[in-house]
Image (cartoon, rainbow, N blue to C red; front, side, top):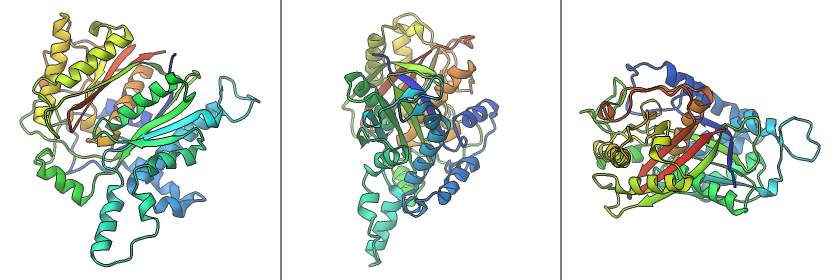
Amino acid sequence: MDVFICGHEMLSAAGGGSKESFARLLSAGTQETHGSNYALHPEAEKRLQKLDDMDDARSLREQDRAGQILAATALLLKARIFDRHVQRNSNLDVKNSILIDRTRCGAIVATSRGATELIEKSVSQFQTNQRVAPKTSPLTSAGIFASLVSQLLEIEGGHFTLSSTCTSSMNAIGVAYHLLNSGLFEHCVAGGCEAPLTPLTAAMMKAAKVVAPKHITRVSSMGADDKGMILGEGAGLVFLSVKPTTTTTARIAAFAMASENTGLTGISADGQALQRAMEKALRTAGWSANDLDLIVPHGSGTQKGDHAEALAYETIFSAEGFKLPPLLPCKWLTGHTLGAAGVHALCFALEALENNILPLPPYPLLEGLHAKRRSSLLKRVMICGLGFGGGASCLLIEKI
């Protein structure tokens, strides 16, 4: 069964929506300057401020910041896609709408670290003998994120939240794809959110020695001497359906995942899990590596991770005698948004397909590995993700 991507939206340091973020990706030069983290873009922050105008503003203000960013993203998807092309009854007045049974629509939302801001605040209150807010328990449970999306979009088919470190949102989309194929849902909203710019999270990442040692003053590039990730905050959602609409950009051709046992934070030197995930996805789709027009890599910014990822690509493509297609890295613009990274990568890929434009920021480690070409017709894209614990995921999409 075909599963179509009928809409997508994101908020991050890149902008206040998918199209705005992609426009910034196209216009940004190599001298982008960032501080110690990637907070939301001012236009994205404005969308959070609009939550105060809602009827349930108090409830949304009580949410963790990740929940607030997710709510703003869900409302953006609702306004731009959901309400325009999804009708609630059989009187389809809008051409090319899809008839949706809300009881057959699901929501799968992912996060890596959960409600970090609210958890840290609540722990501090508890340790200093202050009163903990009555709603602390439900608002700090991971499941609150999927519940929030379901309520805002009036989804009734079921919802849940999953977590698999930095592959979280990509796995949410992959699970949604398989559940749609199983017949459990006919439609599904999937994605992820993260707001990790908190003191404890920053301290943990610094202790793990994975953050950049100083500010980045040019495009973060795989293989640079000055390495490390810079955390970013954001959220992203895609609307999947077994029924296409006029806003359908692509279909999901395959999704696969793999893991390895190199340790709780490790990845093998040649990215074996990623190799297996890519091989399984390509085999499922019936594609060869040479069929790909674009790869959106994970590109976390850590030296070990980036080298392993680059070697995994080289191994897969050299085995068949092919050159790597162009790569579209995006964390240099969004920061590493952890549980939202996968859906952000997918949003950029979908914008590239819609616009037939391929931005190629410089990644020195990859120079010489991929072909120096800009496809005049982008059609097939691979999106890859890696995470703490040796997990790897691969999503293949094809333009409609």
